[in-house]
Length: 387
Ligand SMILES: *Cc1c(COP(=O)(O)O)cnc(C)c1O
Image: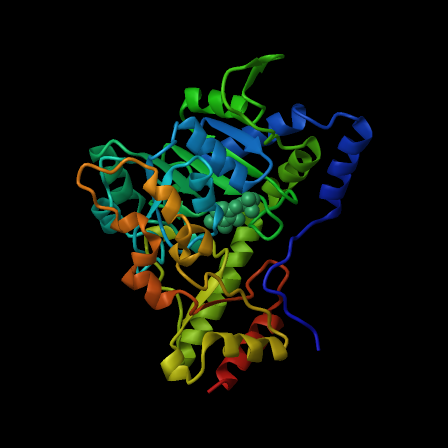
């Protein structure tokens, strides 16, 4: 039986040739390809500056460093995201504070962001989950009122639009990933975008050992440079992004509409919002385990046995991760807050209702660019057959 994969990088001979050319040129770092990729990406997004790095995680780390997030500062994040949204904060000895999700978008709830602000809060990282968009209008309003910086984690949302603006271009800084399964890929890679010249210049230094010129290190920096090979691949992939997105959206809407027609009681398709152009990094469907009469893991196994691979993240709200639960000792070393509310930083005590209700109960159906209509029809048939 053939396996319908949930995601796969779509690469053509153009990418191969572009990379080959770079390899033969002997120029591998900080050259014309990286610069061109940055210009093209900034242009695509409608921002002034882009700084390419070697992963989405590196982009987050650089973004937080640019904004001088450090020891004891709090950064508000959603509990349903990839771990590096949080680890990048921890790596700077800053404190992730979790706000609940909005059950409509599964992204961070802007109202709960406001609830979680303290005198230590420096920034908020809305994550545009599964290709959807967080409630940026309200998040920007809250950020302005409380003088917070906004870093958009758009690692799953290349080309997603919120009220006509591409996500990543709305906050102070936006970050993207080019990991193999993302909308477009450079193998490994990431990029940071901003309209702030000072942020862009600082980010360029931080990705290169904080080095202003030889033997002159003015910031704590790292080696986060993107290679010329990766950038060459990225330039080609970027020309294909809109086409990829069209197909992703078409596949996802086909699945959603067909599944809605059948009205499967145990399955809920995503609620689509007028003002958001969802690019469906995932086609997430929510499983009502009670109505289905089995748990999501069992369902995933059944689908896999029928040749359908699915995504199944995130199993748990991130505050349940061991690395955070063991953070208590470290928290004690941070001087107490004025209003001594340590509830949010003792991760064992956190319970965010909406996140708890849905975590582990999503599956992402295959929706990638390589799928044919017969694949989608097969998926619908199999799902229909599970009663
Ligand atoms: C993929 C991803 C990242 C990290 O990107 P890498 O390139 O894998 O380091 C960060 N945040 C989210 C939401 C992601 O999906």
